[in-house]
Image (cartoon, rainbow, N blue to C red; front, side, top):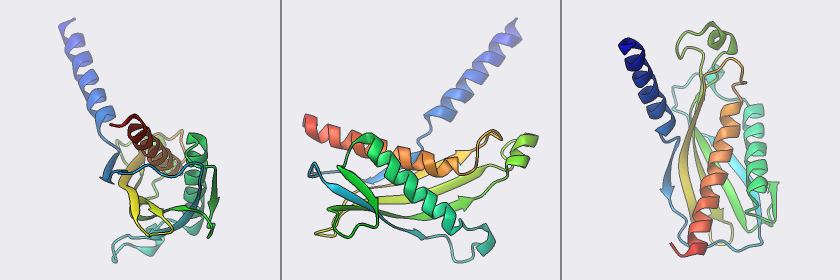
Length: 179
């Protein structure tokens, strides 16, 4: 009985640590409200991986295109902008960024359950810019990982996009409340 309680306590602490770890760090808080309604575009997401990073291990153009689409969808779902398009030169705002770290992972290896082997990981930097002034209004580094064999490795990009939109929305709401 005592062993079971200790085991459950250790398991609970481990889960709390795992889920309380921040998946992102805001590097530039939103200091002024954005004009609403306004348009936003998803600009360039660059490869900012280290120079010695193996070309075969880099995210494909397809991955980056899907990431951009996930960003577009997440921003639309949060209702921050009237419209969010890919590469719209007439938009007032633009989201740009870069991939800082990436690991494709393997669903098969994750299925084997080798404690972290096969996990897909990504670390990105994302910025919301005012297209008229070039000023960075909001920015952060966002990190995600997929460790379940039941999920596609591409989920990392969807989660990063949702984290970015969620935090931007929070910051907008804080400014509206005057905090």
